[in-house]
Image (cartoon, rainbow, N blue to C red):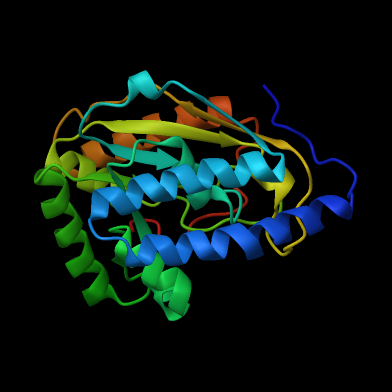
Length: 251
């Protein structure tokens, strides 16, 4: 299976997208921020994301939602700035996304994500990272549904990079299944290092959930290996694990 390929740059398409951002995305973001009730805010954000892609002329195809358990952790490949918006539009509004804490430095984006109930985590401070991990486990045990990009970041070059362990430790210790989610087409539309989108289409596929075999660290590593292999098989990109080892392999 191969993912959608980049198309020649048409300057009218980026202009169309940025007009949509200016006249729709910004007002919709402000609306979400001021709306009362987290469920209402999430449903509004989901509708806004779907409307954004439709108005921009980007087809979003979603398959396999029936594979999602009521309570689970979703893990997805990460290829573009669009990925968070894509999952917000594609998944049921019960999911909170785990996001690097430094994003809160962006006032509007940070406030929007906080109002949507995002879980911010520390990447570089070990003490803070440990506290965040404990908090996520408690949230998962209480029934929260979490969405994670276990690669931690993305690059311009295609390839599925190594997965950090954090999401899988949370799943095993909370006794929750992990639902692999594959995003195809995002890198072709808006790769790293550019804010000039290309026309294309997006596909989101939810694969059958994987249940942890136990609650030990070795079970978390097995779970990571299994889930990553499922995503690698369906994402249409090469395995970049050997050429891009993780900087913090056990996070």
